[in-house]
Length: 82
Image (cartoon, rainbow, N blue to C red; front, side, top):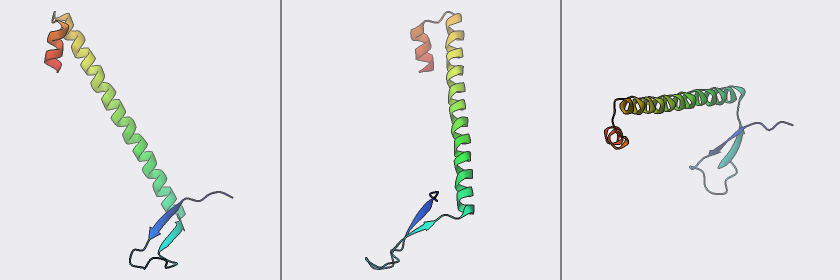
């Protein structure tokens, strides 16, 4: 037997102890597909953020190397780049 993902529904309008106050409902195939699509999109967005951060760091290192080649000291470079 495979475990099907579920969602928890709490009906706050019902009193404590009511049998329908808390329900565990299996997800439909459409809901599962939507969650998988959202997870895939989140993974793409995370990879894009990581790539942008890596590019930013590479640009910073390139700028430091170019400034050093112009004769600036490490302290001057750090002062410029903050």
